[in-house]
Length: 458
Image 1: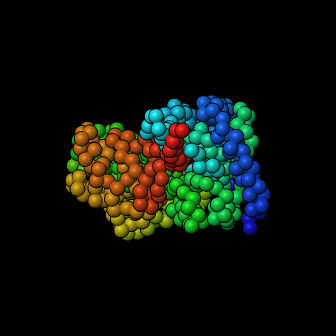
Image 2: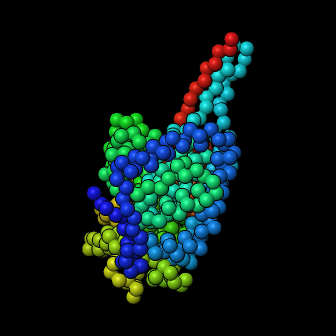
Image 3: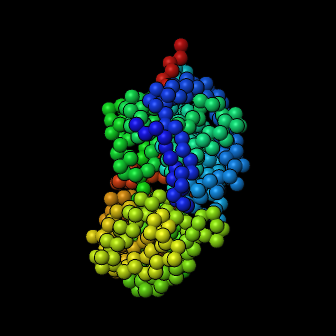
């Protein structure tokens, strides 16, 4: 068993943080305390729970000056972008605004003989396994509504962002959220699987790799514990014949390269109407060539290192394989590219779907661009993928976008935007992206279970 978890900083390869791994008995004790605390937490008025959660969110925001450089050290995002508090508070605030309506009883009848209604009740203990790429925003998607609905939360964060869970729990407890209602744990994979298999949790939310999602589902097999998964994507952009090319190029390349391409719903492949292909490519290359690769603590840096050398190694391998198979790389290697975590953003053409870079998740600053002759070809290519998280359509015709969107195997359809999570809409996917749905009213439905009441009056 691993004795410690180590966060290796992508800035210089040093150990930035290290924490002791809980044994199964220690973890089980923490979860038992959480379960014991859940009854009293759920019994509190919903408005009180909501206010405490929002106060916890604000307390995280008060730490932002410390959080921003800490994230740069842990996962490489440049400090110039200011952290995640905007999206973090937007998501929690929206879920707070709909909580009472989303969780209200469904009233069937209340007459002389019977009172009948359906109530949403919390699952109990919710395990949140959060990823490193947007460590605060992805975690709050489940933490906020789970707590507001009356669940208790056990948070296991990614090793790459080892300190995030501690910060969040400290912030929430500082405003009065009881200690055992929101718990941070440091667990290895085997202990996590064993706890799930022993029904230590009542609901599991996992964001991460396909392999990790499969491990979660295997651990839960036969327990009847619901496992919600969001496992990344290979999200396409489609630039149609009536698109605003300047806006499309600016947004799609940003969505491909922001956060060093380490975005679940980042754009990883772009299809362009053939009459606009050359003009779009020229704009895209110009944008990507202007990125400033460097130390994320430097305000001038616009693209930092990838979070881990092994992530960059996979992206380099996909690029090299594509070029060997005939693809063209358009961005000359930056001087700051060290062959390790610091990686030149890259645009590839002469690509096809036989290449891994157009088929498998890259999760790095590379995008392939192909020309298409019409909507049918674009739809076929967009659907030729094992993932289905988002798709970005560029046109001036809303009805055309809706028609094409109906044909795409994806969780979210964007028109004239990309790489954004609207908390009023369900965050969901299909195929190897996983199953489940976060945020929106559907997020509350998934974090609770229906309980029916059929009360006969004397």
